[in-house]
Image 1 (cartoon, rainbow, N blue to C red):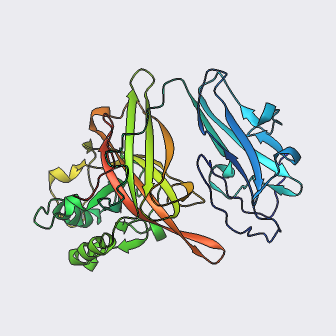
Image 2: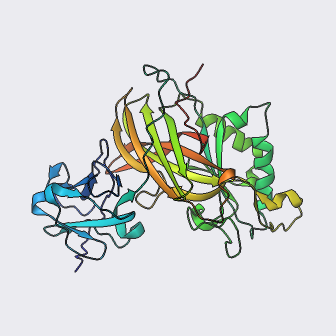
Length: 376
């Protein structure tokens, strides 16, 4: 029943504001997309997410059809979706000859509403509402795996880097280790994000600037220092609550702009102290290299085939946009060893597309709120 046409659809939850890109198919009027006022609802049958179908800046909901992922036509009174079931609910929309279904996109580009039976925490209190001078940190993504025999070279450099109190690198960077290479028996294995080009070990600064260990650690210092040389264009606050009985972590994130711009936000759940024998071709490390830190368990930031985060849209200087993340925790994971890497990315228009780079990041616990951190 799905009508698949030549269009790459932009799908996102426009909880606050949203930004438009040109329709790559050339259709006049812009691209087709679903938006909502609430992408996390309570499974009580009354809390609702209002779905709209937008064609560019035009609301075409009345002329569109919305389907669930099983191709069932949805009948939504006033566009409101409610449920008494806990879980994820996915949708796509058709409008004339256009569709938001995109077989080549992650999860077929389906639009997701999450339903939960636990409360959503309030955003962390802002201690200085008029302030927009935020502490700025770089976001380091280490692409690795226990079966990667050359990865100990990168591990060695990162240990040196993150323990360098003299150069205060621990206060300048947030590190996340994606064990997405050689993952057949890796206890920290994750399918994505993958290293660009498939080469391991590899590291990215702010998800854009690449680094290999044989370049030399001074080059990595330079990348980090260049990343944070300018003032942070946004700050981040995080309010997480873990519900043990439901094995559910609910995280309210707020992004506050220092500079008016288009922003995305992502949250990665990390776990420390995971044991897995590390392949080491050249005996670079020792037994301690079998204990892996900052391992990515969940990377909740997929956007149009990238991991730059969920689109918040334009945020004006001094204003705040919020996003709720819901993460299901597996029994084998150790909650006591978990923390969150949360980042904001900023978009810059480049012709018909918007290019993103991470503009700030924080590493926070999962058991306490963390307010915006301002420069003292």
